[in-house]
Length: 186
Image (cartoon, rainbow, N blue to C red):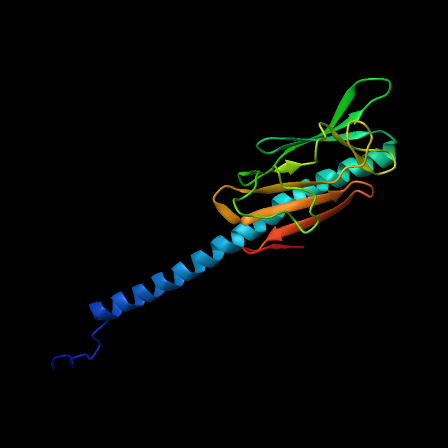
């Protein structure tokens, strides 16, 4: 019987294995960084849509039911939509919290939106103590005067989630903005 022929299969050297693992780790790091930025964009957009749809719900309900509908923003992240009943009382139509740890907030150094409705606070509607939509679709204050305002939202420590919505009172037009690091973009 003859002895088996020597094999040339040596396997992988330790250096080759380490190089492959380093390459995989580098690719994972790039992917994770991209994923974090993409995640912030999606979460910011999602939270902005929640605020936008609550405003639209309030306006459409006011028009359809011919009643004043109040919108209340309670820190850090609660939105309540309430119908004024006649002759008195109120009915809560919607109560919703922003997701992803988002809250009404402004990041340091960010200017007002291009609409220039104000940024003295995260939810700013001038001196209004109550904001509501009327049966004719306008956004008004507690005395019935049309008001403009801006709502700023984001996640603390994540400027990529910064969003703003502005509302033009006489028509209740809602414009949404994303912060791109240097300015607000529609």
